[in-house]
Length: 311
Length: 189
Image (cartoon, rainbow over all chains, first blue to last red; front, side, top):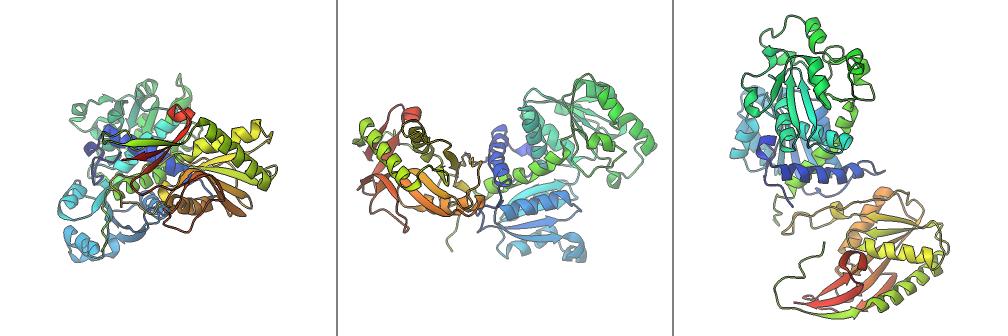
């Protein structure tokens, strides 16, 4: 079995079989990263560039750790300290880096479609680590992998994504991944933060958080992305929290135990209270741990498609 | 699990070992292990995935039932991520499960695999097992030792049968629990 694609640009472009292959490979890597020595030598002749044109802590660390656990050589790049500020174009920047014999590029970029664009112009495997409000495929893979781990399977499960759907690449990638794996998806949030044509993706919209939570098996609480909000989408944070924030009283009043997820970083006390984030029903830290295994699997499977040259 | 032996190419196969002969070899190997490792208190068995695990399980069962040795530790080691032919073959490498729920630190480790051919798998296993600690000693047990085919200076400490096979030939080891019968074949294409 191998992946049907040479790049991971979005969940939209991969198949259910690809996702299952990534999950099975991640199972093996999860065992590897729990060994006393957490490293395998598979990718010792592969060089990976992490290009982050936008801030990130978790994703960047997770990718870097995954690469190092696979013994790849890693170079890091942050746009704030680079020649991008001097006016270099994206293709030039990347081609300059590739001329140093780099095999794979992990890129986060503020513009939607940056990964797809790059994949058409440069000769390297591209992994999208988030492109604007478009997709964040590895996050969706680790989210669905965490659901599979917690509930046994993703198919048939009901998942509600709560919060800022409009600005969220996590939401879009999660919707694609969950649907490909056979889950039912609803979104919940203030009308202003729900994209206009979301129903076209076969996603139901629910504006009442309690109703949404009573329906679901899993609630994925998204962060309110203040940095992407050009205008005011809701009157006050306090009002948002009252209507769409998840607190312990609400969680305990439901007639079943739902699983609570959050892609991080958490605004504690806004979309989710501390006691919920740290409760038994929350799998937030498991998500982070699974992130490394999932990224190792993605990198390993894409690297195995790069042909070996004996030059 | 098996590579494509059942292809349409004309081929002939010769029985190298039948069920009785395998049984005799297993008993002898078990006795040789006991001679060296006594009650197995400082010894762990590690079956190499994917094909070594059947032999390893057989030996464990035999040691426990026939020779009344208790508490034999058996683990499975997958070497996929440690192989030296990543990205060099036609097919992608597929991983199997590793399950070693004991420490190998200061233990006598016995690697168990069905066929020793080039020695490359064992080289990978030697690296892979280091992730679980520093063994006192590592030995190798194989049911079939293909002579004159080694790429690396690796030899078994315990062998069931030595076989001379030329490169175009394959040695196929069948186990009742996986392939329906106990037998070893030499397959010519």
